[in-house]
Image (spheres, rainbow, N blue to C red):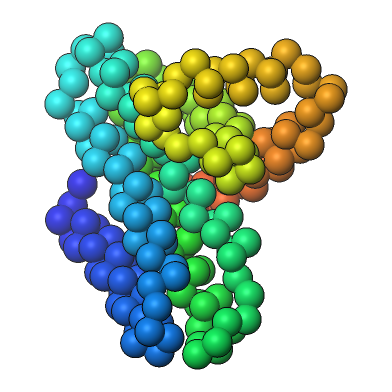
Length: 211
């Protein structure tokens, strides 16, 4: 990845942190401090995706891809933090909206870049069609991960700390799909939105490279 791209991402993250600090100054509280943590989690998939070029054999890359997939939903997850938006004392509502959107779009941008690195790595080793097939598979899985995180309040690391409880909840949803139709509406709704957004973002970059 070109250093200037990393610098742009770092600048975007610092801008988000600056907005948060301004809010702290205005209100005297750290209520939205979780946004900083969520932004950090959103950056982890990019770190794992950048490790892929060092893996010469696909079998050796599977653990890296698995960890990347586990943490990838953290990138679009920040979009759901808009649920916290409401009028609060000491700060205009519009400021909180701008701040949350800044965190959300920065996180999504970083996440999309990590997905693109994974897609290109797979396309280089297995062909472009499989690269896009992985994207098509990742998006609904990400939507499901968002449901687990936002609605059921599971975290990515719970697969290690509370694996049986997590798998029990997932199994209950999968085994009774008709009784949990709202889960699948959420999953495929967010999955389609993310797929459309990523496709537009990817095509835009492709057209810019051709100019």
